[in-house]
Amino acid sequence: MQTLPSQISQLNAIVEKHWGIHKLRPLQEPAMCAVLDGRDSLVVMPTGGGKSLCFQAPAVVRGDTTVVVSPLISLMKDQVDGLISSGIAAVQLNSSLTPEERQQHEKDILAGHVRLLFVSPERLVQTDMQDLLRKIDVRTFAIDEAHCISHWGHDFRPEYRQLRLLKSMFPKASVHAYTATATEQVRGDIIQNLNLNDPEILVGNFDRANLTYRIMSRRGGLLKQVLSVIDRHKSEGGIIYCIRRAEVDELTAELKQAGIKAMAYHAGMTSQERSQTQEAFSEEHCDVVVATVAFGMGIDRSNVRYVLHTAMPKSLEAYQQETGRAGRDGLEAECVLLHSGADVFTWKAIMQKAASEQNQNQFQYQDNDLSYLETAYEHLHIIDRYCRGAACRHSLLVAHFGQTYDKESCGACDICLGETIEVEGAPVIAQKILSCIARLKERYGIGYVAAVLRGENSQEIRNRGDQNVSTYGLLKEHHVNDLRDWMYQLISQEVLVQENIDLGYGRAVPILKLNGGSWQVMRGQRTNIRLLKPAERKKGERAKLSRAETGSWDGVDRDLFETMRDLRRELADQRRVPPYIIFNDATLRELARIRPSSLERMRMVSGIGDSKLRDLGQTFLDVITAHCKETGATFDS
Ligand code: ADP
Ligand code: ZN
Image 1 (cartoon, rainbow, N blue to C red):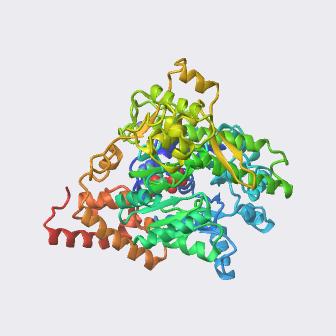
Image 2: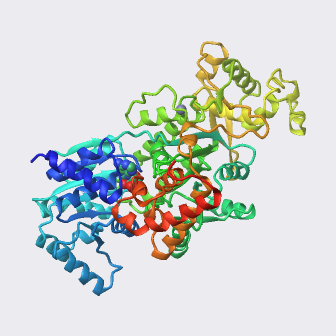
Image 3: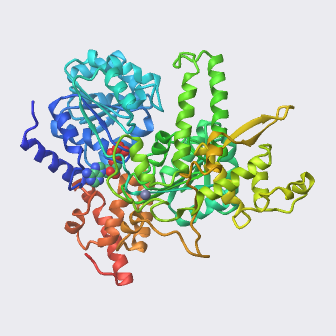
C-alpha cells in the first residue's frame, strides 16, 4: 500500500488543527507515511526532533487505535495529558488506575474511541491485555525509547526484551521503533530484536543547532564557575550534573548558601525525595536541579535552558544524551562542560569497582568477561580528546555519530566564538614543559612541575634544590592554571604520560613520565602540538552570545513573556499538568513577540491548535490586552 496524496494533505491538516504546527520537519512526513502504509520502521532522531508526532498524527488519520509502548509511567502520563489538551483521545493502562477507571478505559477502547493507547512493555505481554488488543484488531505499535531493547545501548531495560514476541503475537500489525540513540550497533539490535520486516529506516540530522557548547577546564573554584553559568540564566530551568552522589549533595548545599534554590537528585535518595525533586522541576517550582545521571529519562520539561556538567561524562554518547535534555522546545540553550584531567581517573576507578562487583554477582548480561571495560575506557579517551580538541564542538560531535557537518563555523561553540583560543608557539612551550620533567628526573606530578616552571619561591622547591635546575622559571609569564591544563593536553596528545605510583600504605600519586613522543617533541621532530587556553576577557565583559542565543529573543517582549509564564504556571498547577502542556516556550515567545489582538491572529501562532485556542485563547488574550494597555505596546507586530 502506498500513502495517497489525499492522506498526506489530511496529515498536514490534522497536524495544523490539533497541534497548530504549520510545517512538518524533514523526516516526519516519511516516518508518518510508514505508519499509514503499515510498513515497519525505525526512526532515529535527536531528542527534541519531534518523534512523538510521527506516530501521533497518523493515529488520528487512521482512526483506529495505535498502541504506544513506553518505559516510564511518568513519560506516558505527560504524553497522554498533552494529547488530551490537543483534543485527541488518549489513555494509558497501568497499575495506578482504580478498577472503575480501568473499566471505563476498556469500554472506550472496545468502542473504538481511543486513538492512542499507552502501555508498559511488561503490561503488553499479559494475556488479558493481548485479548483486549486482539478484540480491537490492533494494527499499529509504536515503541518509544526503542534502544532500551539493546544491551549495547546506554539504557538497557530487561523488560523490553519481551517485545521480541510482539511480531509473532500480532502478525498483521506493523511495528515502529523510535529512538535518539544513533550507533550502528544499537540500530541493528533494535531491528533484530523486534523482528522488524524490511523496515523503513529514517535517520535524522544529529546536529542540535540550537545548543551552544562551551567546554572548559575547571579552574578557580567550581562554585564560582557554576554560579557564573546560573547567573546567565536567572529564573530559567537548568540541570547540573555531577559524577558522584556526594558531589551532588555538596554542591546543592553550597548553592543554597549562595541563595540559589537548588534541589538534589540521585539514586541514594528515597524514591519519595526523588519524585519531589522531579515534580518541582517539571512543574517549574524549582529551576535548578543538581543531579547524577540518574536524573534523566522521564524529565520532559522542554524549556531546560542549560545543562552544566561539573565533570566530564563517560562517553560522547552520554554527553549527547545528557545535553540533549536542553532546549527540547527548539529554542536556544547552553551546554557547559567543566572538566579536569582527573576525570578520566575518577571514571576508571568507578568502572573498575563496578566491574569487580558485577563479576562477583555473575552479572548476567555481560558474559562475565572484562572486555567491556576496554570498550568503556576507549569511550573515555574519545570524549577526553573531544574536550581538549581545538575544533568546532558541533562538527566533531556530529562526525562521531557518522554524519558530516557542512558549515565551516557553527557560531555556537566556545571555539567558533573565539572564547577558547590556540596558544601561539605551542611546540616550544611543550618542549619547555617536557624538558623540565626530564630535568626533574620524572619524579613529580603536575602541581610540582608547574611550580618549578613558574619559578615559585617555595620551601618545597628550596629543600630539594630545584631552584637550580635550568628550567626553573622558564614559563613564569603564564598562569598556573594554563600550565596545568597544558600538561593534561599533552597527555591527551600522547606525548606525556601520567602514571600512578604506589607510595605503599595504600596511597598512590600520579607522576609525570616521558615517552617516545615526548623525546620527538623535545628534539623538534614532532611539531604538531596544539595547546588551548581561554581567551582573555576584559573585566566585566560578558560572554559573547551565539547566533542561536540572540536570534530567538529577537523582538520578544520580555515582560509580557514573564507575565504569561506566571499565568502558565498557575494554569498548570490548577490542572495538575506540567507547564509546557499548556504552551511551550516557543509558543509563549511567539505570543510575546506578536502580541496578537484577536483570537484569529492568535491561531496563526505555531503551537496553538483549535482545541487550545478554544480552551486557553481568551485567557491569554486578556493578559496580552491588559499588558498593551498598561505599557502602551502595540498589537500585532
Ligand atoms: P522527541 O520525542 O523527538 O524528543 P518531541 O516529540 O517531544 O521530541 O517534540 C519536541 C517538540 O517539538 C514538541 O514541543 C513538539 O510539539 C515540537 N514539534 C514537533 N514537530 C514539530 C514541527 N514540525 N514544527 C514545530 N514544532 C514541532
Ligand atoms: Zn563551532
